[in-house]
Length: 297
Image (cartoon, rainbow, N blue to C red; front, side, top):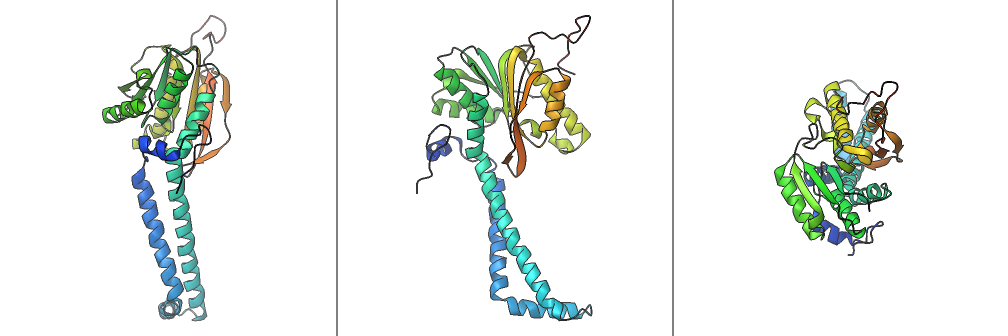
C-alpha cells in the first residue's frame, strides 16, 4: 500500500519516515493498546449483553434499586466503553499524525514565514529534536544558494548526534551544526542570529514544575526572552507551539516586538497549536532618553 506524498513538498511519506521515524512512539503504542482493549470489551458487551444485565440486576438488587434499571446500566456502560475505544483510536491516530506528517508540513509553513532566506547568514532552531525543522531551514538555505548556516540546539547530546545524521541523510549536512544547551540560558551572544525558529518545544520547558504552574510559565517566558535576545535587530522569529501561545504573544508585546502574527489553530498532539511570527525592531528605543530594552527580563 502506498502512503502518499507530503502536500507541501511532494516527497513520499515512506522516505520521510525512514529518515525521521516516529516521535513519542511509546505514547502512540500505549493509546493504541488501550483502544484495542476497550474495543475487545465493547465486543464482549455485545455478545454477552444478557449475562451482563443479570449481573447488574444482582448488583442493583443489593442496593434495593428496581431491576428495570439493570438493562439501562448495562447499555450505558457498554456505550461508554465503545465511545472510549473510538476516542482512544482517534487520540493515537492524532499523536501519530502530529509526530511526523503534521510536524513536517508545519516546518515547511514556518520556513515560508520568512520572506528572504538569501540574506540569512545564521539561523537557530531552538529545541531541534530529530531535526525536521532544522533540515527544512537548511534545505531552504541550500535552495537559495546561500552561504548561511543553521544551528540546532537541544538539551541532549545524544539527540544532537542523531540530528546531524538526519541532516546528512537529507543532503544538507554542510549547512547544519548542533549544540547541546539550555534554552533558558542560550550559549550565544546578543544579536547573534538573523532568524530564530522553534517547533513544538517551548511548552516542554519548565514541565518539572507542572505545565499550568506560575513557575513553569516563568521558565517559558525566560525562553522567549532568550530567543529575542539572540535575535539580531531586524531579525525574524517563528515559533510553533501548543497551548501557551497567548502567553508568548503577550511577552513579545512586552518586549516591543513588531509585526506579531498568529496563525489559525491547528490540533496537534490532542491540543491546540499556533504559529507565531514576529520581527525584532531595528531600533531598541522605548521613549525619551533612549532607554534600551533588556531582552533577558
